[in-house]
Image 1: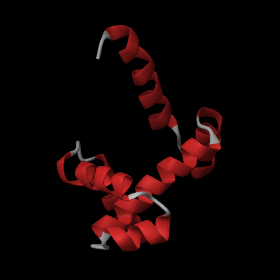
Image 2: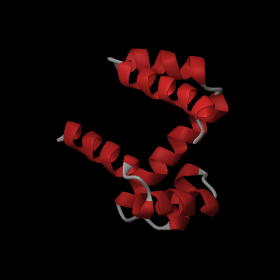
Image 3: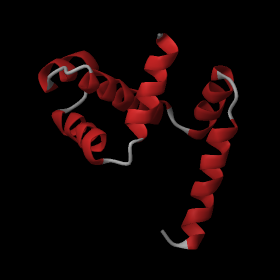
Length: 97
């Protein structure tokens, strides 16, 4: 990524890391994203959760409304991606325990 495009991304990362509460997170995301973008992001995270639980594509599609293309993309990220989904989902699971 070239430097002019990298700087705004780094600012976004710092902003996300500065959030301290769920309420702050909600407020920031509502300011940053459209309702559709938030729905898409939350859908992808839910798809990742169901994939980790071993659910099949058809069940996931039925439960989430996600297309099989979206489910496939999320699965590809889970298997071959940078580990973001895996880390976040593991932390969420730890908090539930």
